Image (cartoon, rainbow, N blue to C red; front, side, top):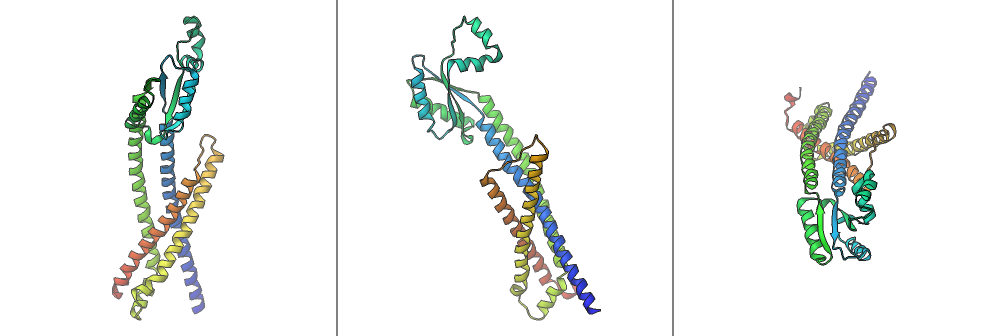
Amino acid sequence: MSKSIEKYNKIGIKTSYISTLIGISLVLFMIGIVLSAMFGLSNIQSQAKESLQGDIFFKPTLKDADIKQIELRLKSWPMFKKIWFVSPERAIQEFGGEGQIEIKELLEGENPLPPSLCFSPKANYATKKGMKEIKTKLIKAFPQEIDEVNYDESSVEKVNLGFKQFVFLFLSVAALLIIIAVAMINNTIRMSLYSKRFTIKTMTLVGATGKYIRRPFLLQAVYQGCIAAIIALAFLMTSFFALNNVLETIEVTFSWQVLSLLIVSLLFLGVFITLISTWFALNKYLRMKLDDLY
């Protein structure tokens, strides 16, 4: 009889441990989705900013070879993501599109568009202040060569304002989801320790110190957090793989830096949340009187 009870208790403990681990893993999986979306949003924002373009127009007396020399010098400037030479032929192609033949006919075969340089700024310079800084520096560096620097101010403002509003909304939702997730993990661990409340109290009654009682539970919390984070990462990678292979219109890609940051973040959150939740739950049961345990 005693053996069957002991066996039943062991099965119950294992089931409780596994259910706690799965619960924490699913919550960390939800946090991982939020973090992935945040990293992805940052990448999309950078791409949108770096898709902005500006034009550098030169004095009519300047030759193509001189403009290309300036292009080589500007490629070493830290504020440019990309810079390229635009010939008069390419300029009329971009300006006229499909109707370039009609434009050439109207101009009697002449091309009035001068050669120029086109540039895309790096993301941290794709602001009103950053673009003005680029314009000022260009004119100051090449006062005799540059005639004018143009860019669409409204596009710069729209890109920055639009993403600020979207980021604020997304971060608000993400913060709410993370708070709910942390509360769920905390509740899961509390329920797990609730079944061990009598064991904890018995240890205090026989003279065990709080530090001695906490040590195995906190070590188990660290172990649980690491395992749960690994399981959550496996779920995430499987989900990304499925999205990339099942849905042709969606492609989820991360750089090694972002992927490493995601892994470290989930491992840290898994260990930190389980550790803190276990600590507070243990302190609660250590302070409770024996009669309050029933």
